[in-house]
Image (cartoon, rainbow, N blue to C red; front, top):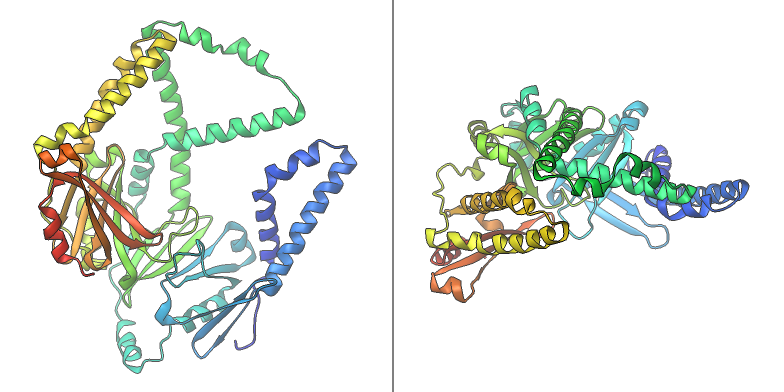
Length: 478
């Protein structure tokens, strides 16, 4: 494969549609505000320009293999050549979209750990035979000692862990679905508003006939509560159905195992994801929990590694959802250097508890008083204040940290809790901040900066004893 090659020609079509989709709301008014023939001409012209640009991008993107090295050229006017070998590869990701499955091609993405590009450094689309060949070449080292070690390791493979249907169903059930529904509703209304404005249609009189916001505001407290419960129930049922379908499609046949000091992960029904993560490049582990997950000690697990997760909506899933017992088995089997079972957790002192309540409660009271004054309904305060107070208490309980000479553990958040386990040699800096009132109680806020796909990620811990700073500093390798 010494001769330069190009991506599969189907990338021209997919890239053209991507450009059209990204610029859809820019040129659609130009098309619809003219006569039919003019609109067709404008639309066809824009699509033609985007297709020509996609062809130029495809034609000038070349790659070839030489002496276990991958050379990757991009650029239409200004040429750029990237050279990659096994030693500087962070992540190898092989996947298929639904259309790529039909055609019989695969997409190979390779990252070297650079966090400045915001996308994969190498993006190749070819048939399976060529993709497998490229992957095998760039994973090959010329060091005889490493080659010998790899030959032995090739025969060893860790226990394979597969996500069960029960775990996926619980994930869909406990997922924070309200954000999904709100996004769908807002997107639908935005699109409908643009469409009606373009077509110059007014449906407000039909909406007012069946739903009047003033009538809702005038209802009694009991009626408002019943209406809110009914609305929430409908939204939750709808979101649950959507969540179950999306979850099973996305994480179908999820499998993870370790081989040759790499994590191998694959999943997906419509769009297949298959990626390899060198364990040495994993900087941290993130454990994410909704409120229900916290009650039942369940975790969504992600790994933090340089180079993967820097593209939009891209996340390095370690395991979709697991309980605490299985989590410890997964970590001990696959990445034992992140084991945190023996870490002693530190909590904020009791004299710092009120600091988690003062600002949120006062701010909420002010907001609810303003709302009550406008709508003449004090129900807002009585309905939401208990939730705010409970949220503050949960945040206080979730604010923890622990450490030893190898790893640092920290957690934060209320209804959405995030726990992060960081290798001490991945910590970039630790910052202590205090104000006058905190100094009187000998407490402070900690900020742990660590290496990730975003160059630097942040772990915030609030209102902890100040003496932890020196103990943590002694374990950090700067």
